[in-house]
Amino acid sequence: MTLKVYVDRISQPARAVLIFCKVNGIEFEEINVDLVKKEHKLPEFKAINPFGQVPSIADGDFKLFESHAILSYLACSSPGVADHWYPSDLQKRAKINSVLDWHHSNLRRGGVGFVIQTILGPALGIPTSPEGAAETEQVLISSLSKIESVWLNENGNFLLGNKEPSIADISLVCEITEFEVLHENDRIRVLAPFKKVLKWIEDTRIATSPHFEEVHKAILVSKASLHKLPVDENYETASSIKAMRDMDIAAE
Ligand SMILES: N[C@@H](CCC(=O)N[C@@H](CS)C(=O)NCC(=O)O)C(=O)O
Image (cartoon, rainbow, N blue to C red; front, top):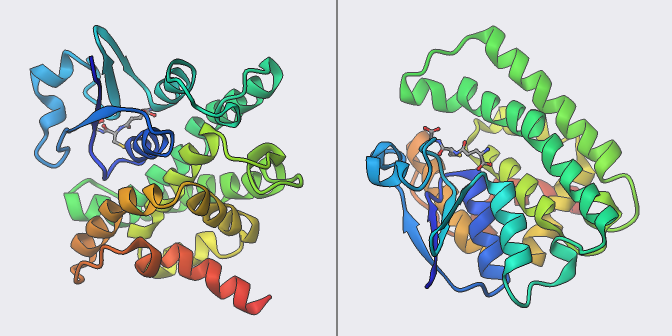
């Protein structure tokens, strides 16, 4: 029975799961759960995930939610997934789990909060405040600084000094690419100081190309809609995060 992957491509963890499946040639059926239309609140979706969130999967009768659990399950259960994505060596695997656990209470907390406080909240009528924006920005900047100084503080292009990407790289990078939707001044202020982070995002894009760009078209569509701009669906040319990296290379 084909693996069913329930996603909305506007969701960071959903994009991470999709990119992982596509890069690894995992056979699956993508089922769109439109968050804007509130399809995640429907009883038929809650039968898959009682918390009503994407991503979720159904592998036959087996249902699973939480992107990190999904990524590690698929890395172990799908034939042909290269070891570097989720190493069988228990200590290497434990290190990847430690990045993933850290992510949810640091980078994701700051990132989601900041996006809501600055752009999404006002667009969706969610209450925001200058204090909320300042607090989430502080969590976000502190998280980016930890990625730069701790998780990327070794030789190797990827987290933990790895020479090839793991599920943690995809998960964390997909969180940061959400900042594409921010106001330009906010995006530059929070991201530009972190040169290693910008390079690592680009290295992860290249390592997972062309699936990374294809799945990220959705973020460019969201950005166009939030900022009332024309849609440019080409991540390679329209991504301002990539443009920041390119400017850094030119300045080096
Ligand atoms: N910790 C979860 C987070 C999932 C999550 O927050 N999904 C969001 C989209 S990014 C969602 O479905 N939100 C709808 C809602 O919570 O009502 C994971 O990693 O999968």
